[in-house]
Length: 393
Image 1 (cartoon, rainbow, N blue to C red):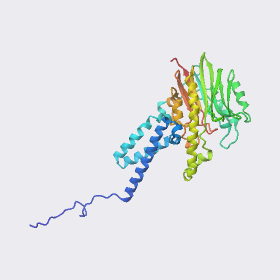
Image 2: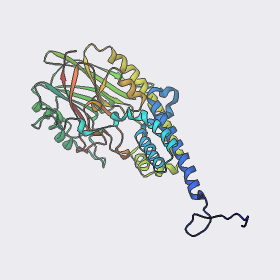
Image 3: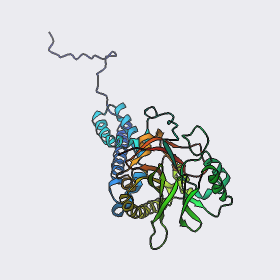
Image 4: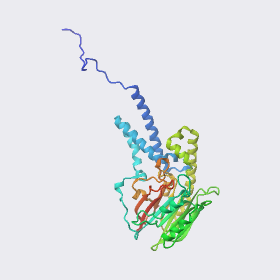
């Protein structure tokens, strides 16, 4: 008998079975995807923190809050890749990073089947509020189009079976020098039994305007001025409805200062090739966030001292993942989070993912419906409407 040890292979071809080796391409993909996942996850975590960190301290972090929805989706895609690759430990860590974002989901997106498809038409019990930044009545080509806006306003109550104007309409960036702007007053005199209107100057011929079907018994304003120059404006009016006094705040917080051309370049990704422009945008966003924060600090004092039920609307120029939104929603409720459905964007440029127009309300109201009317494409903003009824606290 031979002492020579024989080796047998389980390979069908009789060759020696070897452990598969990771290819260089696979190793490079692993490293690149891991680096991408870490970078995006860190950015997403920072976006979670932006509502709690004042821009006065770290204004540049505000940009992360603006991109929070996109960061969440990108990290989710990274998670799916790790799951497909069966990298369970990495996938588990990424999943944990996504969990806090789920608590903010209703600020951006609400599942439609959890909402009423059509709000109940109860004109006697409820009243409707509309907020709309009309961009000086300019269309996308920059031309004035007051007639188109008047046509929309005449049927701006989406909760009525009949075409009619909303009960309270809050405009931002209304241009008094636009040809035909007097048609608004003519329309409201026809729509309302009595016309109540209040203006607060924003700059030169641009005003905040509030129309009300109900009597205005008092009013005031809060300026977001810096060094005597207007940097955001707020107004409030006290209206009497069925013997109830309601205070309505109409707001236009200071702009993000991102031009139309910059918005287009951001959408196309072209701006990433220009470091100076990127730095300039980040600095402007940071500085303007601080201006808005100072404005809201003053506004909050007035809101907190309000003796009546109140509704707060307007163009905040900030997303739900922002310090300004966090301040504004203290002791207030967001109508979209309660009654909205689908994706809640209200600003058409920048891929149409930004929600910067809001209708908030205090205790003492029950929201009956909410709508961002995306069929109205007159301004760069989308008009938002909500229906409320007063309830006993």
